[in-house]
Amino acid sequence: MKHREIADYRNAQLIEQNYICPLCELPIDPKQAALDHCHKTGMIRMVLHNNCNGLEGRLNKWANRSKADKKVFMQNVLDYWDIEFDNPIHPRHK
Image: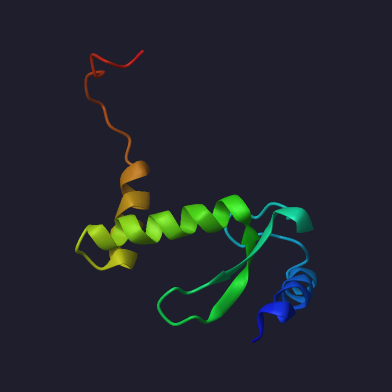
């Protein structure tokens, strides 16, 4: 794909996605649309909010830093957040 083709491709993809971000599931204003791609392969994925695109990239980097399989790590984080702990309150909690 050539750089000048990005806007048209992004707009067509937005229509195909019904203007919905696949990560947060909220509507995407075309002014806030980012054409996401894999930084390893260059393959275009989908259109995300600019903010969701940045967060996805940071999550990917952070998960890679764990040295574990990043999908396993992320699933473990989600599972961990669902645990109901019955422990004392941290003293710095306000």
